[in-house]
Every structure is written in C-alpha cells, then in structure tokens.
Image 1 (cartoon, rainbow, N blue to C red):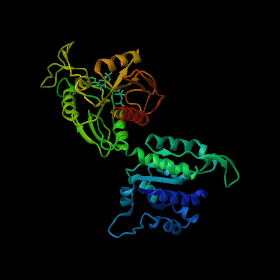
Image 2 (cartoon, rainbow, N blue to C red):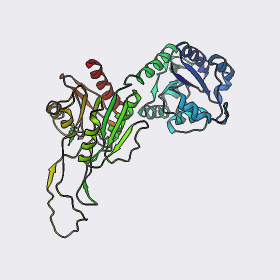
Image 3 (cartoon, helix red, strand yellow):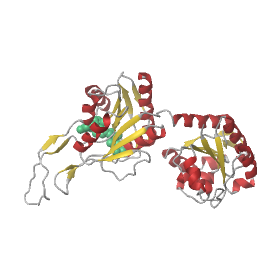
Image 4 (tube, rainbow, N blue to C red):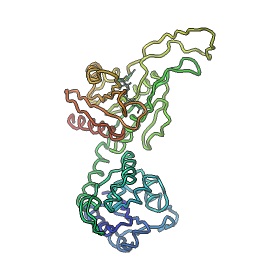
Length: 397
Ligand code: PMT
C-alpha cells in the first residue's frame, strides 16, 4: 500500500481531516500528517499522531529524526500528497510556489501527485484571485476535489464546503491507481523543433517550443510509464524521471528514434520535424555579397512514417499541425503513415498550436472514430493523448 502525506490547513473543516486520515488508514495506507500553524488551533497535532501512529510535523525546523532533513524525506517518501482541508490562503501559497511553512515546503519539494480538497466561505472560493490560483495549480497537474454546496459554519450558503470523506478517499484511490496504470510500459516521445543548419550561424527551424511533447512526457510519467524523451532544442526543463536524448537536426532525431524504437511499447511523435534541410550546409558563415541567395533543400527522413512500418504490436501516435482542411489532412496522414491515432491541431486557431500553453486537439483513431477535445491546457491535452494510447494498448492486450 501507499504512503500518503495529509496536509491539514486552518479551516473549521480541519476536524474532518481526522475522519479522512482514519478512512485512508482503513484502506491500508500509511498516513503522515503535516499541519499549518493555524490548523493546530483547531485540532491538536496529538489527535493526528494518535490516529495515524506517526509523529505530526508543523514547523519546518521540526526534525523528529536526527540526521534527516524532514521536509525532504517526507516529500520523497510520499506516494501522494492530499491537502484537506485547503484554505484560500494555502491554495494561494501553493500556486505562488511559496515555501514559508512545512506544508508548502513539502509541496514544493515533492514529485508525488498533489490532490487538494478546498474548504472555505463561498465568497472566498468564487473570488477571482482564488479561482486564478486554482487554474494555475490545475495547469500544473494538481487535482482539485471540488467543494460542495451547503451552509457554512458562518451561516453563509453556497459552494465551499469540503467534499464528503468517501469522495475524497475515492479520488485518492483513483489517483494512486492512475499512477500505476502504465507501469512496465515504455513510452518514447519526440518533442520540440529541429534545426537544420545553413551555415555555422544560421538554420532552418520552426516555432515549436516543445511544450506539447514535454507535457506528454510528464503525463506518461504520472501514469507510471518509463519515458524516453527525444527532444529538439528548447528552453524547457525536462520532467524528472524521463530519459532525455537531445538532438538538433531531423537526421539526429531519426537516428535517436530508430535506436530507441525497438524497446518502446508506445511511440508518440509530437515534434515539429523539418521536412527539408539545406543540401550542403556551408562550413563558414556566408557573407552578404549578392542580392540573391538560392538554397537547395533535400528531404529529411520521415521519422514517424519509417518506424510505423515496423511497429509490430506497438502503439504509434502522430500529431498533425495543420492550417487548413485539418481533419482531412490528418486522416490522410493517419492512413498514409499507418498510425493507431493522430492528434490534429489547427495551428492558426487562437490558443492552439505552437508556443501556447493551451491547445485544441481532435483525436482521430485508426478505426475511424473522431474525438474533438475542447481548448484546454497542454497538460490536459497530454493526459487525454496518454489515456487514448492506454485504451488502445489495453484493447490490444
Ligand atoms: O511544441 P509546441 O510549441 O508545444 O507546439 C506543439 C506542436 C504544434 C508542435 C504539436 O502540437 C504538433 O502539432 N506537432 C507535430 C508537428 C508536425 O510536424 O506536424 P506534421 O503534420 O508536419 O507532421 C506529422 C507527423 O509526422 C508529426 O507527428 C511529426 O512529428 C511527424 N514527422 C514529420 C516530419 C518528419 N520528417 N518526420 C516526422 O516524424
């Protein structure tokens, strides 16, 4: 079973965390509790210590075990962090990445999934500031267990009551399950642009930032997959846990994919690969000595199309970056390249495509199914692509 870190912040609903801790222990998990200073005014840390059988930490300088840095150890040992109840103030601190107490420090240091069950007055929950913090945390993969409607301790009525204990426990179990559902599956991903050299200082490239491909790598890791990320030049930090292969050109990306393909179960090509490269890159910087300059380009290998020919039992997923007749072009690519799934984005559409934090994908399956997705964060898009690949994988085995 799993080690869960239960963060309790200073809402009247703090007493509910006792019940939540008990149910999680009942489900077979080890529970460690971290409290904010204000939560300790509502429920005694001794109560949680007695319920969980583990010491409760509050202060960042609390070091129950000499020789170990508690916030790092707790952050690393947790399989999941649940913050219940979470006040507006704690949500704001988490969204801003503040680390001004034990709970927020652990939340920043952990790589475990984070679930938040908010509890606050309805006016505070619906306040644009709180909702902006919720959005920003969601975009970073934090899962919110929505508050319910009811009468608050202050007498106000509305949305803001902490979710019921069974709902919270079920959300925890689902997230833990999700973290396992691609265990043993190797996902190979390409991301970012390729740079095709013209001379030592110039290249042909494109506007891909790598955000879409990196989000897919993060999502695959969150589902427990082993991940190899083959990336063109980007300014992004690769997700922790992925094996990263850095390349510059389409030919290098082709070689890296060929080398890794046999060992993968799922291949997802999110990179924007240059279809052509200068035939003869110049060895020295070209001087400005004429009014015209004609570059002769030659075709690069089609990475996706080539490996798909020997895909065997692997799931092969392509992307299609289109500017017109998006569905028609994507369907043609799916067939021509022999893919299981293609995710098409119209890169001219506001909020979609290159560089954006959001995207609007339509998933087209080999069996003809078409699943249009709404405009959502690239992280959410990535989750949907991973879920779709997982479903195809499950149907096949
Ligand atoms: O990186 P971001 O800024 O987040 O932007 C995301 C994105 C727009 C780059 C991404 O969503 C996307 O659409 N990626 C695919 C871009 C692309 O090259 O599309 P395409 O329609 O030209 O290619 C079709 C498929 O073949 C793609 O899976 C591509 O990776 C692959 N391909 C293309 C050419 C080539 N020589 N080899 C390939 O493998």
